[in-house]
Image 1: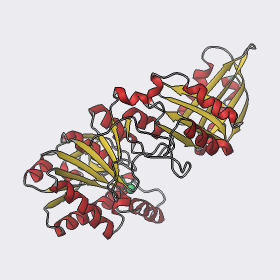
Image 2 (image 1 turned 45 degrees about the vertical axis):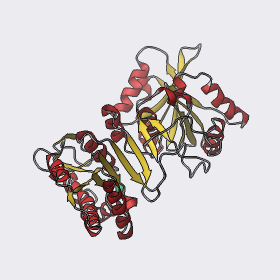
Image 3 (image 1 turned 90 degrees about the vertical axis):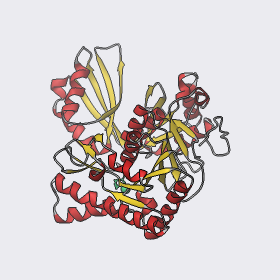
Image 4 (image 1 turned 180 degrees about the horizontal axis):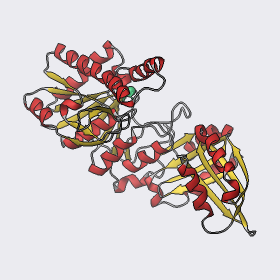
Length: 415
Ligand code: ASP
Ligand code: MG
């Protein structure tokens, strides 16, 4: 008998009807001869609604009380789901995170899981029960309730799969899997069959809303296969797994578009050792996240540095550099909020050449100017004018053959 961990997100359990439908899927997995552990999120937008409610009471609530409040969302869905399974004539039992020994550090609202003692889950499984666990929550060694950060149920599921040595972890959502791009931006985007942990981590950091990043990191560290599937349809989802040779044939797996960054350019920066260190230390001290950085050495004694920050931190970042301009040796500061970042990700880049030139040619053909470029081993990102972002993403997506009709999966995936 294999053990499977399934996770159902808020949209999959948004109302009574959906909970009953999820119960049927769980029972089907059980009937197929598997032991099943299910992790659920709070119903629909319940977590957001609780946050709004708290805000009406106190604009600055204590984090401990906030976690106490938010953890209730998942407690509702686990109980209802257990009842739904009982109705189908199967045995099930619901547990909160603390009840199944999910121990976290003490950082309320963004706690990290430190240990899981799955004894209670194992016992219930041995008694033939389907086990349902509240996602997104745990407790500190002192017994305080904590939450794992928004979207944290993914992390609960993968961590439990690892602790229980499950065959794999299935993440159920309301789309068919992970797409080659955001279908709202690129209607031609299609489902990816198989992808590596590294690619998903890059796509997530590039602004594609995929899965909770830490859950992918845990999956990668312990080599836990993760399936992302549609909770309403019986279609094969996306398998996130470790790299294999065949996957290198797919050069680009996905295209991401981010429009939440802004560019700051520092002109006439003193060209001597230690200046960049000081500039970025000053920004780091102010807790500002810097993404892309470009510096160009000219023949003069000064240089220009451009970098991007999140739009919501732009004003703060500008103030920090302007206030310290003299001390840092910066001549002039300018900024541009009208930018978009378009990125392509794929492990095939490691073994194929000419990906950057292909991407840049597509932009040139469409008269889109490149303002910044940055690369990693499996990613190429460009910054273009904000109003050209969508066009750039679409054209690049097509040029790399990612369209639904263009793609023929070269990799066979067995489930
Ligand atoms: N209910 C939590 C949230 O909305 C956790 C989750 O959905 O994974 O962030
Ligand atoms: Mg949620």
